[in-house]
Structures are given as C-alpha cells and as structure tokens.
Image 1 (cartoon, helix red, strand yellow):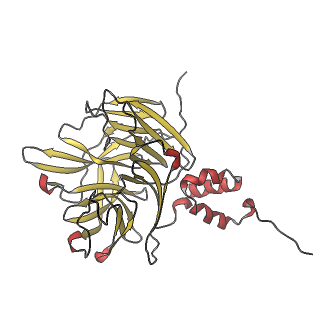
Image 2 (image 1 turned 90 degrees about the horizontal axis):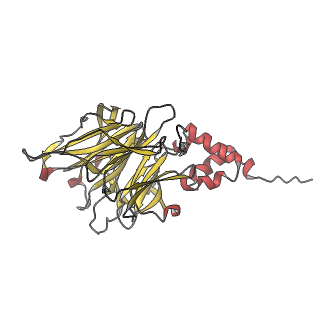
Image 3 (image 1 turned 135 degrees about the horizontal axis):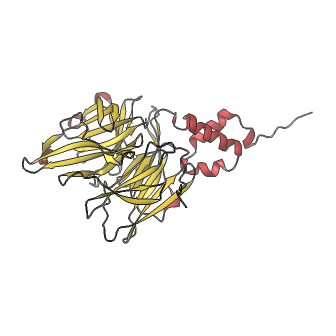
Length: 377
C-alpha cells in the first residue's frame, strides 16, 4: 500500500520557512503572514530574535528615485559580482511625491511636498502594513524640503515616538508627539550662523544626530559640527567632536554625511581630497569617540570618475567595505550608480537607477505600532 503525504504551508520544515521569509521583500510580508498563522508567528519570532536582519552583508533599505519610494535589498555576497541588488517601487505610495526619508525603530518617516497648501508627513511600519498620515499646514509658515526633519522617541516605557521639524520662515522649531497627536513649538535656538545640513539627520537609540555648518563670517571660515537632538529632554546637546579637521575656508569646504552601522553605532563620512569614514566607539547626546574605518585617496584610483559627490552610505564591517551613493548630477556613464570602496585601492560600482537616488535610508523591521494613544476625556 502506498501512502501519500501532502505538504502544506503549515507543515513545511521550520528551517525552510525561515529561508523563505528571509527572501520575501519587506513590503510583501503582511500578505504572506496572513496566509498561515504558523508563518505569522514564526516571522514575529524571527523579528524579535534578530533573524530578520541577522544575515551579515545583507541590507534592507528604501530609496527615493524620481520622488517615488522604492524598496532595496543589497547583498554583498562576496561572489564574482560581489554585489546583488533588488530595487522595487512601492506601488502603495504612488500617489505621494516623497522628498525625504527617515528610519527609526522599524518605522519609516516619509515627507511629501506634493501639495502646495499643506505638507503631508507619512509614517509607515512596512512590516505590519500600518500607515499614518499627519497633515501640517505650511502656507503661511513656509516649508524647507531639505534637512528640516528628524525622527526619534523618548525614554518612556512605551517609547513615545516624535517628529522634529524646523520652521523655514520664523527659523523656529516644533515637535510632533504620537501620544498626544499634536504639534508644539520648541524653545530651542541654534543661532543665525548655524545651519542644519541638507542631507538631514539620522536616528540612533531614539536620538537624532545632525550634520550642521557654522559660518564664521569675519574669519571667512566654515565649521562642520555634529549635533544631537534628545527626544526625551526635547533639546539640543552641545557640539560633538569630529575625527577630522572641521574648520576650513569656504572654498575648501568638504562634504559631511552621517549614517548608522547596524543601528548600533554612528558613522561619519567626509569627502575633500580624500574620502574618510569613521565609526563611533561610544556615543551619547553630549559625548562621542571615534575609530577610523577607511581612508581612500580618490585621485589615485585608476578609472575613478571625476563626477562624484558622496551621498548616503552603508558600512559593512565584516567585508571591510563601504557603499556610497553618488549624488553627482552630471549625466554620464556613472549617473545613477553607487560605489563600493575597500582596502588597498579596491573600488567597484553598480547601477541603482537611471538617476541618482534623492535619498536613502536603511531599514530594520520591528513590531512598533502606529496606534494613537489618546490621553484624557
């Protein structure tokens, strides 16, 4: 007698389920989880246990191409091609023209400036499939598309997530609380000579870190600085030390970009004559220490393009490389490419799209909910 056994989704070996879940795009997990309770439970177990992001040299992220948000999976697999990329437009957000992206605690903050009379802020948990729209009128106040937002949370038990915003016309600042579902003005001031940089902020351990420029008009000098906004105290810290010469003449001013390393450390990139990357060994709102990760002399790289402006970047400590998105707008063979730099003059490139991505943020899935916690009445 022959016995036939039917394999269903609920009876697949767990090791195979883990492999399948690791290959599914983050934007498709909600649909997949709804097909089987066992798969839903396992996906949450993997997420909490860290398996969703445990694969070394594999990165999830979102990029902006033509004001449209796209998911991106990047594998630095070490094979002949070294890099494998997958970029897919998130069709659910086709009606939005996104100008900035921020990631914090598994939540994605998308800033849209499609409408002239109002600015729409959208917060999403791509893993849970939750989206929350936050309208903010800006007709009279004005709106700064670049470097005017930050995303974080306070140290309360339930992690009240908050959005920081710089006002354009008045020069003031305000903050939005998820718990109260309201905006409030902030009593903070950076002074007229200090500006938040265009590439915005990154979030680490609930706080936001900004690249800022201070202009010393009398000496005709510009100064790069690192500044933390603490979402618990709702205040800026003091300027933090940087691992490079941060005071230069205006015509010699370099490019400074911030990134996070596996949501554990802050990294800073500085491009002038060379490309330098440093990673924090310790970081708090008012204290930081650094170690050098990589120094690249761009002029000595055989075949490296002249049109290169460093943008967002990813550090892979295991492979000892850094992936840097090219912000240069010159239309040539390197238009829309990202570059990988390594030790001993190693570099290569890969295509991201037809145009340079306007923004990029890494993404680590989480179970953080977007539900509003109402207080009072």
